[in-house]
Amino acid sequence: MRWMRAAGRALLVAAVVLAGYAGFGVRADAGAGAAAGARGPLTLVTAGDLTHYLSPLLDDWNEGHPGERVTLVELPDSADETRAQMISELRSGNNRFDVLNIDVAWTSEFAAAGWISPLRRDRFPLDSFLRPVVDTATFDGRLYAVPYVTNAGLLYYRKDILDEEGEEPPRTWAELVRQARTIAPKHGLDGYAGQFLPYEGLTVNVTEAVHSAGGSILRDDGARVTVDSDAAGAGLRFLADGVRDGWISRDALGYKEEESRQAFQDGRLLFLRNWPYVYADASAEGSKVAGRFGAVPLPGPDGPGTSVLGGSNLAVSSRARHPASAADLISYLTSERVQRRVLTEGSLPPVRAALYEDPGLIRAYPYLPTLRQSVLSAAPRPKSPRYDQVSLAVQAVAQDLMALRQTPEQAVARLARELGTISRER
Image 1: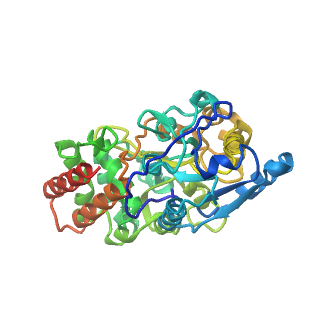
Image 2: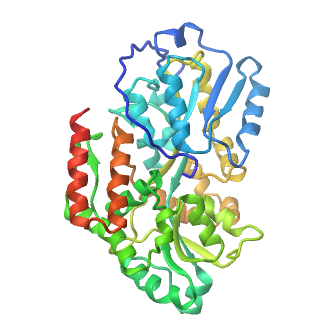
Image 3: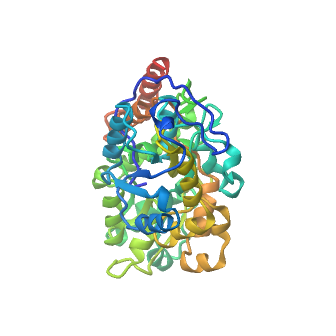
């Protein structure tokens, strides 16, 4: 998720009049977007394509659809800036963007604000996707997007060092803590790092800890606050104790995805929580840990933990100029053939379930079975039309918690109060 992270301010829900495009699988806004016609050229907007795989995919589409050519608009790599620029265009009523590649956490907000159109479920082969990813594309019981890329957190570990110590990778928090506290210092390493700088990555790490402990943050699409529980407190305590006891270094409080990846790749960490893209980078020539690390599901209190479900969804703007072409482009990008290329050329986890059982792909990407297991047991971030405010509240509380300015009990109570206020403002 290094290229899709949410921030900013929530916006008032806009009223939208929807007209049916039953034959095309998308019901478009009845205003300017629909008036321009069902088929024609398109603009796809996305965050920066770091691996440069997307242009060739669109070149193939353009060759076969000369009357429906797609122009790619790449916004900044920072998801915060991407979200802000998308919202600025959408609020203006501009029909510049037809298809939006949005972080899975933005679906509820964009749907509630009327910026994206609902889609017909029978238009897309949702049964062929990994089961949990479809939930990220829904809001209020309706499909508003189609899963495109998924993601789940993995625990990377120094296999060479654990082998030398006669240890297996940790399956529980207790095993992780013991190894991070006792083995890492013997080898001059920091014990454990995630993404602990106050940004969307911190929200992800906190949500994973809370869910792994059996708790939750919000339910009912943001209408009910559930974070005020012993389980949520246990998840926050796991992170705070790591800083207090030193197996999470103070340096890690400034890490985002790339800083934490670099620390692991440079041989400075025993354990790292990060996304699957790290596997290819850490295996590349020049990496100090190439051939010396492994990846397993995130641990929890008593066994495997719960990752946050990351990734992105493709949505049709409610002001799309050519909604039928937009729906067809989404079908193309989520087809099994193109999803294979998303993995092999983009190094991004696909949403098609069959690809995770392909022997050839497993030989090339040994982490696929582990990633499949993590995705199938993953949980989405809290769904809310005001997700940006929810995330900012989680970040602010977690920052004080991990700076040891608040106890886990104080953090839980404060977060419950702040989320209650956000929920009442819906």
